[in-house]
Image (cartoon, rainbow, N blue to C red; front, side, top):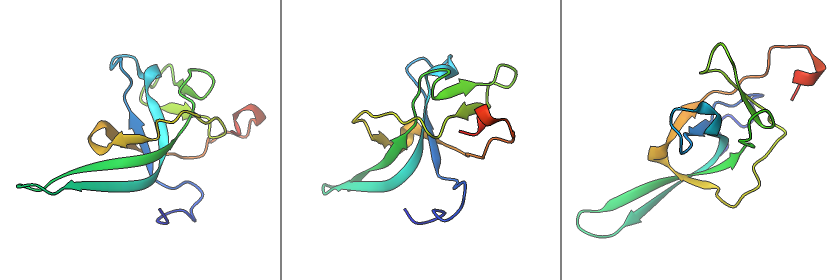
Length: 111
């Protein structure tokens, strides 16, 4: 995916809700790498869209942190990766998110 790859914070992020839809600490955040469409040749033609993603570590206070006052604001540590083999997700399961750099000069918040 070359679109936006030259920008410091490309807008190609995805979020997949965890098994507990109430608790936002079980959500998975990732960066979209590739979009894959699979077509099944039958009548009518059916297709499935998959997202290949690079996932961040979903563990609370390690890779992600939900803001206590604003629960829709989630801090993601860009240096912590989720090293599992589950790199694909159905496009219908994902929502788009936007990543921006942390607006602080504190050393502990750089990543």
